[in-house]
Image 1 (tube, rainbow, N blue to C red):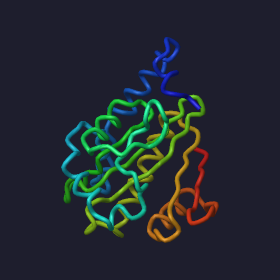
Image 2 (image 1 turned 90 degrees about the vertical axis):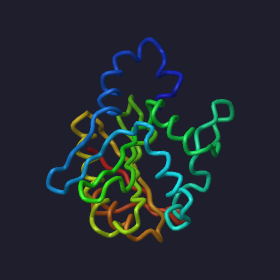
Image 3 (image 1 turned 60 degrees about the horizontal axis):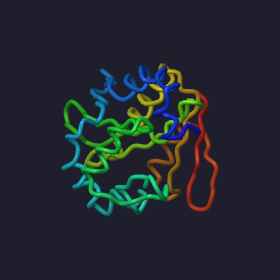
Length: 192
């Protein structure tokens, strides 16, 4: 796996056009009215609201929002503004605001743990505005991420969902095929 130290090496220059495209290009699905807009720092207030809601957080990592500590390499809970700045600046992450043309900013879609050698990433998304759950938006957004990743040249995508998160399990099974059960989570892998 490509480390953060390798990202800043002289040999990494050839990947900067890919990183810029990945982190700075919006995706649009005209049929659904959904835009995935790269994070720009304007997301703090909405994420403070969503991360404070136990119903939204119930399947997230308990340390959310967190960054990876440079010394211990462990997860370190931080304020939302610091977390979002970390996501924006770190080339191992590409996060997008889910904007529905009728409903506004309703969630986020993520490419986490991007590995530029394997050309893989972990896919995640959250619909933070609960009134838009179970409307098929997450499935559309997931497909948009996968199509964009494939067009850029990514080869493999990973994801996971808690077994009790029925909507996510259905969504991921539809997009990835059957997952592998380990304890209380299903793990998915897709070759693009």
